[in-house]
Image (cartoon, rainbow, N blue to C red; front, side, top):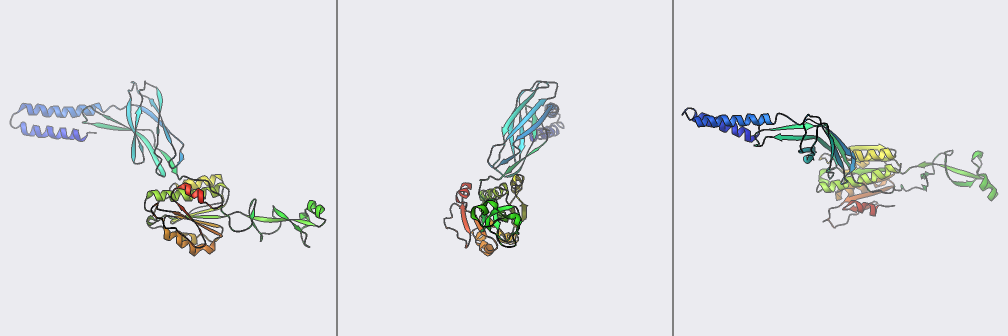
Length: 374
């Protein structure tokens, strides 16, 4: 491809010939031909491209925001000539990273690694590798792409948090419901025998010790259910850093709940993002989904999203808006416990109080872990 300098040379050659030829100036014609020949020679210079085979590995392919990620390029010279060291560019989202390729003999392979930027959350396309070949005078340039692009998924940062209580009797396996039907398999204690109890439930060891018929109390276990709502409205945050902290906060809540195998419903101002029973695989899915969340001018208020969630368990609202969290009082009666996480502007010193709710003010992720209710 002819560069701007090359097109300028051609234009100057044409003007020089147009001005000098009618007047019989042979020097003008000679200089014009030299200019055209120089551009032609430059195109021939860039015609041959290095024959390389490139394969890229990302380690890891999924990474928390701010954590290190490495790209490893496996480069093989498939040409017939030895290749001296080259400088290439590997595309990474909106930037290009300079990569120095080593000298390669015919058929030789070498691995080059470099660090990827992980400050921005989301899908980060990496590649293809781009090699620019230009002539010494910069009149022509040819860009060749090598290898296939890969995708690095930058996920939110998290801190481990404990599950929230739902205001009922705690049990080692979860929350015990007194209204559960008898005959389930979770042992909750023993009590005196009442006429009509199933004789198969008699606890003979306690009966022998007390001299009174005792039966096992079996109840159903109701696991703590958590609804997490992230405010995704543009107006709720003063900048990208505050929104990223809000995503990190709701990711910490949702990931911790799912990792502990408890039910979770995750909502944003654009609708339901996830509804899972809990488990390690679903905890990873939580981070994958939140890696792609963006702000939206059309998103609904978090209190409106909470009203669509029904009424059970614990509610966690995450927002950078004081007014949005104050609206949590309108849905307080629907849930056993409400926690409001306020991503506060460091310059805002006025405390926030929400009736019937626990308010946690955070300016970094460590504040959330320190103030989280146990």
